[in-house]
Image (cartoon, rainbow, N blue to C red; front, side, top):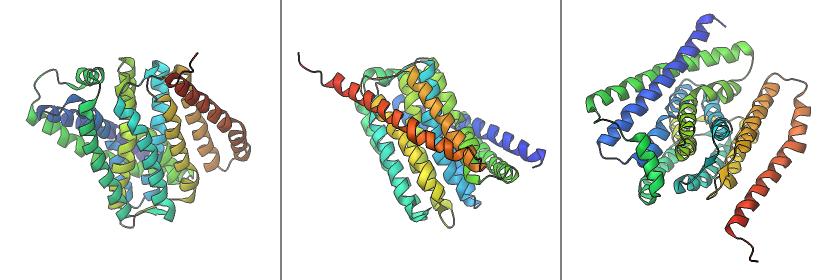
Length: 361
């Protein structure tokens, strides 16, 4: 692997992050100038815009025939968003979800994750599958715009404080940001995909593993910045809403467009169908009790999510390197860690139920 390949990967990642920042900034200000509410901007333009690196990389990879990386990027990003970003955000400040739309989005994320698994069961996500997923995104966006009108006043105020421009936006300047951002995303995705493929060949692992780990974490950097900064500022609904909205966009928008762009569809490996997508579904299911009305995501829960992401990454590395410890590691996870997690989530769900249905004295 040449040093220039490393530079291509690093500079490509930098261009993706900068391109996403410019795209989100320009698009959000243009939407504000057009009279779109700050809540809708935060739930759609910003949440979708922070996923633009995933979109650029997956579509480029699909077009170039690296379909394994295209699918791995989406699945890995969704796992990273929940376990790592929410974990770090909750470790910074306990997260209390007040936003009704976010709580409704969690079951929808689980549903769309299961839909993706069902579509991939024939070993690929074809063009028709991609069109169906993208149509779901259009319907979801229309629903979000309508449902946002019934959101709580304190949630609306939080989004207005964050996404209302401090001065009147310049249409020409922000159009320039959008165009420049798109150009950087296109160029950055090309460099990153080429560098990632060379890295996979050099290390001797599959493109799926690289897509699930390095590429997924790299393309999720805009979500990392948005959610962690929001958590530091006490904007908890924005921190959580950005993650959930980005995951939905990844499933419907990124996979949809990548599936439609791939000449022969997106092949989905047996390992992806049998392990990685189920892990993605499990991470979404784990959010159900902690996103319940009036329930906090405590710091210990955030640290637990981070530990699970470390455990998942360790398994991928052991599997990719054919390490002898893989079988024992998997046995420990199945025998102790997963049952303990199920028990913990069950206790949390019971606490939520008891808080809503107190026993009469």
